[in-house]
Image (tube, rainbow, N blue to C red; front, side, top):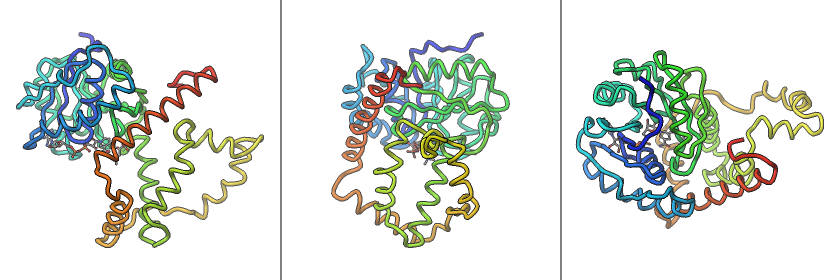
Length: 321
Ligand SMILES: NC(=O)C1=CN([C@@H]2O[C@H](COP(=O)(O)OP(=O)(O)OC[C@H]3O[C@@H](n4cnc5c(N)ncnc54)[C@H](O)[C@@H]3O)[C@@H](O)[C@H]2O)C=CC1
Ligand SMILES: C[N+](C)(C)CC(=O)CC(=O)[O-]
C-alpha cells in the first residue's frame, strides 16, 4: 500500500512551542488539523499562539481556504490520529515518553500514514522501536518558528523504508518546507550539532566573564548571522580565501584549529552561570513580552526570506538552491 502523500488532515501530538508552530504552518497551508496535548489549558494556549502567528502568515500569503477555525482539539491520542493523513509528534524530548507515545500513535493510525517526530536529536531507531509499521516512521526536525523557517531535517531509523523518506520529502515540500535528508542516524543530526557547538562556546564566554549575553548576540547578529541567511560556512570561507578560494583559506587558517580557540566539553551549568544567562537575557528582553518579541522576530524573518528570495531570483536561482 503506498504511503499517503496528498494530505488533507494533519495530526499534531503535543502543542507546545514546536507543536503549535506545526499547527500554524499546516493551517496556513489550507489543511484540516487535529491536535492533542495532555496539559491542562493546552487548547487555549495553542489557539493563542496560532493567533499571534497568524498576521505574519497572512502577510506571507495563505493557501485559499486556510483558516484558524479548521483546527479541532481532541481529548485522546486515538481521536487525534485515527483519520489523519500525516502525523507530527512534538512531545517532550524524553526517550521513554516518545517510545510509549509512538507505540500508541502508530497502533491507532492508518497503516500508510507517515509519522514524523520533531525530536531535536533522539534516534528514531530507539524511540520507534515498538511502533506498528515502523517502515513509515521518520524524524522531521524543524526549526523555531516552524511556521516560517523552511528547513526540516528528515532522518530514518533502522526500519524506515526509503519510500517513506521520499514520501516525507513530498509532504514537507507541500507544506512549503526545504527538506534535508540526513543520511546517517547520528545524535543531534546536522544542524543541532552545529548549533550546540556555538551554544557551548557562548556559555563558556559568559562563564569566563569575557562577554555578556547581549554582546555575544551582537557578535552574531551584526556579523556571521547576516551572511548565514543566504550562504553557509563552507561557501563563505571559500570567499574568505580570496581568488585562491578554499585551498588558500585552509593553508592560512587551518593551523589555528590546532590551538584550538574553542573548548569541546560544555561548561558546568552552575547556579551562577544559569543566573548570569537568565539575568543577561532578561535585560536584553527589557519591557517586551515574549509574544511581542515573537512578532518582531517573525516580521524580520519574513523580510529576510523575501529579500533572499528576490536576490536569488535576480541571479537566476530558486529559493531552495
Ligand atoms: N523548542 C525548540 O526550539 C525545538 C524543539 N524541538 C523538539 O520538539 C519537541 C517538542 O519541544 P517543545 O515544543 O520545545 O516543547 P514544549 O515543552 O514547548 O512542548 C511540549 C508539549 O508536549 C506536551 N506533552 C507532555 N506530555 C506529552 C505526551 N505524552 N504526548 C504528547 N504531548 C505531551 C506538553 O504538555 C507540552 O505542551 C521536542 O522533541 C524537541 O526536541 C525541535 C526543534 C526546536
Ligand atoms: C535548542 N534546540 C536543540 C531545541 C534547537 C533545535 O532543535 C532547532 C532550533 O530551532 O534551533
